[in-house]
Amino acid sequence: MIKREKFYKFIDEVIDQRITFGENEELDIPEISEMSAEELAYLRDAIDSMRSDLSLLKSYVDQRIRGRLTGKAFRFGERIYRGKNASKLVPYDNDKILEFLGDDWKAAVRPAFRTTAIKAIAEKRGLNPKVIMESLFERVETEQLDVTPVSRAPKFLTDKLKNDSDIVEIGD
Image (cartoon, rainbow, N blue to C red; front, side, top):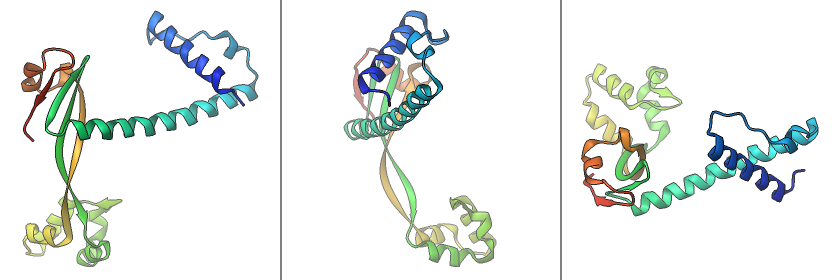
């Protein structure tokens, strides 16, 4: 097993080499190069666990940012963080939807319900797609975080967010 202190020392070394030599240079960490296959496997397992933990942490941080930026945009370095309201359709009752679809279910389920297919099936059956969608799904309001490089952000945001750490109110 790799001790936590040693693992973080390796991470610090990777960061130092990335900053010094750039991301395209191959790493040179003699202590890792000298490890046995078993030690390398332990290190690899620790890296996989860390990747999973970092993903959880990133999601947690994104949720906090999203909560603080609803209806706002924030420039940080070369990225723009934009909190916006969104909505999604959530089935009231999966069995009711499958009953409605009948033999057409394969066209509309991949692995979630494909709303465009359900609308097309309703039209094919001579039914009002909007009424069918309202009877089968509820619209749930959500918040969404959009992180975009400044170079790819909408012009109205780049015009408003000229400096690092600027925050502006935006409409949904």
